[in-house]
Length: 366
Image (cartoon, rainbow, N blue to C red; front, side, top):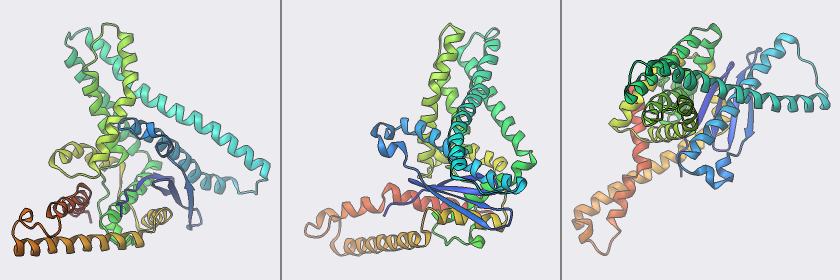
């Protein structure tokens, strides 16, 4: 059975969780009940082989995540708009018109978000770097300084929004999302009490992804050495998808690997999550758990994983016993293939899962 790697996002008074081609958004309504909406969303990569290629899939995944994120944010906000304005029944014509308007609004919102990010984190640092270039005639130094400026703008941006009163509860739900995913991946039953024991930091977080984009962009832009300032900016814009794709591949690797190199590179992103996540309360954890239950039968999943781990441990014990009785595997010609069992026991997937459990245990917060 394949391990499940759920992703998520905090929304207004709620949490969105996504598992493969299904996502669920759970919202704590003004009357304190929890509303859960489940939607199917087949990724482009599942329909078009080209979008499953490394690097390319990162760009596609980023855009799809942005669309779903804005859609679920809009959905969660609607409960509080209705509460403030008074809910009224809509006719079919009004509902159809509303959906059409939401589609157009979604397009412009996503486009504006991308343009704002490119302008703030790519064009502005590049423009400042052109002034630095007049006093420093070294491409690598200028590229490094441009990267530092980009990183500082990003850090000030994150710090600024973390001070906004309305964002504090969103960041608490962000912490609830991470704690719930960590609890699920550790194989511990999803109860608010259990989930609260886990860390609010996660290596696959979008905050870590954006921080990594800033770092990788420095390396990419160091190789751009053209005389024209306009061409330099154009090349930076053209490289944005490649940078996002490479960053996605690393985040994907980091979620399944726990080597010391991955730990070192992931550390700054995890530190930055101290700003974008806050400790949630029990009610927020209930919402996050409800969102997971919308996309996964976690009880059946954890039971299957425990059975699989038990079976692997049983085979490992058999391997040791047979090894003692017959000597080296290659000398035992009539039995099972010892090399196969050895590779299976040390598989990348199983090893990554065991390493994740160890990492979560070390980083749990009370």
